[in-house]
Every structure is written in structure tokens, then in C-alpha cells.
Amino acid sequence: MVLEESDEYRMSVDGRFAVWRSRDAGESWQRLTDGLPERAHLVALRDAMATDSLDQAGIYVGTNTGQLFYSRDAGDSWELLADYLPGILSVEAAVVSS
Figure 1 (cartoon, helix red, strand yellow):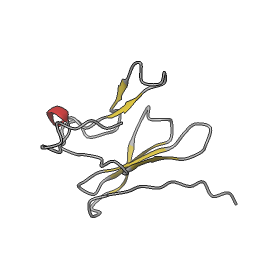
Figure 2 (tube, rainbow, N blue to C red):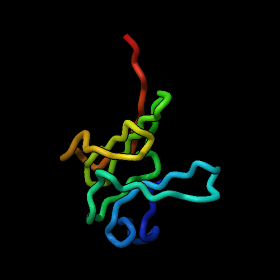
Figure 3 (cartoon, helix red, strand yellow):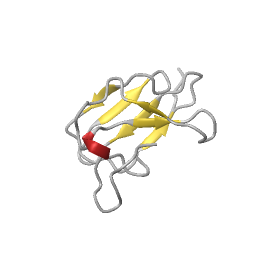
Figure 4 (cartoon, rainbow, N blue to C red):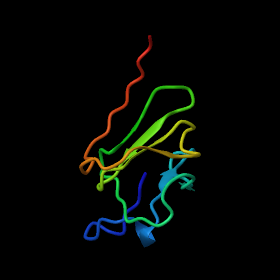
């Protein structure tokens, strides 16, 4: 889950982009930021997050300003996969075996 300031102001809360994770069906949430920009008014739109089907889930998040971040460890740490894209409206993930 990625939080926004409000529906009117589509930007990250306090200019601090983060992904939030729950491992107990939403009873509690953990803020995940390792590898994400510290101060950035980024937003991920509703369909701009996807996961893959690997045992240690890969997570992919696209932003309204064209960055695509990914995590190979279920969100514990993040890296930039692509930058300077158009605003990302939707992300899909698939595992391709050889």
C-alpha cells in the first residue's frame, strides 16, 4: 500500500515516499523505505503496484513521475529499475521460466 496526502493533493505524505506492508491482514502496518528516495513527492496510482509469484515475493511499484522501483525481498529493500518513463498508470509482473 502506498499512502497519499489526500484525494485532492496526490502526493506522498510529508514528501516522504514509502510502501507499507501488512503481514497480519491489516491489523498492523510496517513502513518500508530502504532504497526509496528520502524526500520526494511521488505517488503510486491504484494499479501501479504488482507482485510476482516467487517464494520471496518480488514487488514492483511505478510512480506518477515515471520511476519504477522493485524489491527482490518482499519489500525489505528497494532499487530503481527504470527512470524517466512517462507517468506509470499500471504495472504487471510475470515469472518466466526457461
